[in-house]
Length: 302
Image (tube, rainbow, N blue to C red; front, top):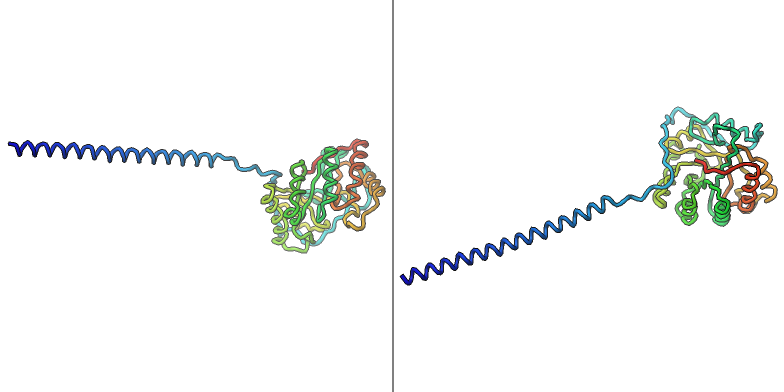
């Protein structure tokens, strides 16, 4: 009997021990499960935060042009210069003629306007290897509250970031002036496309900026080239006024240059001024003031 009681007590102790042991393991499992749930919840919150974080907005303008069949157009070289006679509104007659001839290529030689007598002027600048005059030009535009388009080569886009950032941040347009600054009409369709898109991609990479305006180096183009520019979702911008201002060591006289620029004021005019020109930096304040005195206003070309 005594042995039976002892056996019974031992069995009871074992049952209690097993129950306690089971409870401890259960508690451990429960705690582990809670930790796992907590980790999952943290992961979900982190994921959600990452997903909802806003992508930086791309600056600039993206065009979506109707595509043209480049094989239909001639690759013969055409050279543009805005000299020659002027019409009854004082516009470059050649620019007016070419605007009508090449309008279907999404190109501007003079700004097309519903009211051809509207006194609007567009300032554009080709910028290059020296910054001094460009900085002065930007100072004047800021002071006079005038917008401009700045056509830059790949070298400028990649290596003159202070200037390019200032152009963008002060509300001007940073535009495409090719990689090599050479005759585009002598290049294949693929080479022309690369000349445009390499600069385009550099602007996106360095400034998160989408360009949409293109200028031909030296005004040398072809009809096929205009189609290529269009198919890259760009607009080709020529000019209706220019002067001999691109040689740093041989600048035209300030007084004569100012008078020439004022005398050529006309509705829809697109002025081409080189950003390396000390003469242009000098005449710009008076050109803006005199144009405004004659009833003209300045707008950003788009």
